[in-house]
Image (cartoon, rainbow, N blue to C red):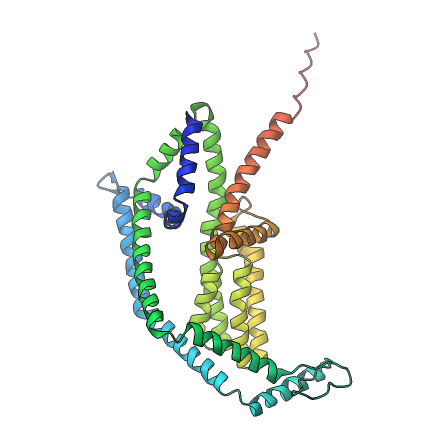
Amino acid sequence: MFAALWVLMAAALVAFRHVLLPFAIAFVVAYLLEPLVSRLCRWRIRGRALPRWVAVIALYLVFFGGLYLFGRLAVPQLWGELATLTRKGRDFFNGLTPERINEYSSTIEGWLYSRGIPLELSAPGEESGRYGLSFDLEHSIRQGLDGLSKAMKTHFFDAVGWMQKLVGGVLEFVFRFFFILMVAAFMLVDWQRIGRYARSLVPPQRRDDFGELLTAMDEKLSGVVRGQALICLVNGTLTAVGLILLRVPFVFVLSTLATVLSAIPIFGTIISSVPIVLIGLTQGLKTGLGALLWIVGIHALEAYVLNPKIMGAHAHIHPVLVAFALLAGELTFGFVGALFAVPVAGILIAGFELLHERAQRKLAPAPPPAAPNAQ
């Protein structure tokens, strides 16, 4: 009976897998907020505990208040920096004349030779230097810009279709955003009831084992999901502080990018570091190297201090398993798969560790019988 119920549920999930993503995100949101809701429910007003639905409404009011302040204060700054970055990037590419490229070539070539790297950035048709190492910078840049121009003409300048997709995408995002928050609110209100219902689907003789499995999974997920969310905020804040100290432009855009991509372990860090270092290099070699060293310091702090303190030993997942989970998730489900790869890996590892521990208990030799007391 119970096995048939689980098979039926699995079949339903497979059949409706294309609509599961909003519910999965809603579950993650509810899981992140559940400790706050439980803490609010401990408050007593006139001797009565605060109902969960009141706690959820209060938490959502705070969230929407923070979202309003973010929209009023941060979004204009973000939009302004993005517009400036776009304008400067366009001006830079428009200014790549042959004379400017030759100037860059001479500067880079001199810097490389001063460090013992015999690379000549030659013009088309020129012979390579005495070391036989040459690189046609102008041809490579022009080839890249030509490919970029063709791609833009193909995909970008269809203004009507692009605007239709943009409006449709914004409307879909707004609908999904409020739908996810609504589902998460229902989950938060009935969190204990959902847990009791899940236990009722398990045979009575297995409910203790099921409860132990849920506890092990919660230990993994609380570190991976809640811990990673806190680490994202810490990384974004420290990145912003470093960029301000180094006077790197576009602080808000770059720190926001670092905050968001920190949700993807390892690869998110690498992706967010590239634009930070490149923009730092536009301010000078020392600034670029300083930005790189600052990022390395942040992630050393994350690896050796924040991860053990925030995530704890129970949530630790070996970096090799993290990399495997990220690649498998990205190849199977794209960016969304990479985003959910580590939490899913944490659940699977928790289940495997519990089964392994049970198997070791069964295979362990029985203790020898106690010797009779000497008379």
